[in-house]
Image (tube, rainbow, N blue to C red; front, side, top):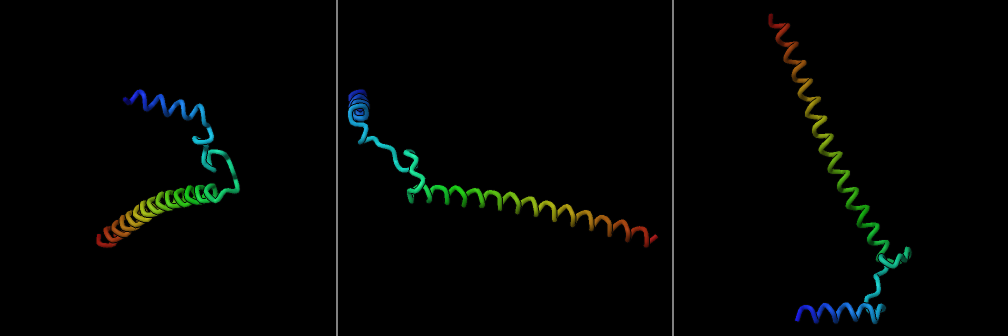
Length: 82
């Protein structure tokens, strides 16, 4: 039964390619609203990804600076206490 169904689908696609026509993105219509929406969606996902990467990088940089300043203050306090 599954083979018959797959065979029917394959024959339909071969015999009537307009039924299996591509969407606006696959066909390459650059002025389609679907294409503009897909581009905007990709840009939003890229911006979110880069914002997260930069945020984590900034957090780690701030933590490193804080640790270095704290270590410098601790060593200064130990020298003056002697």
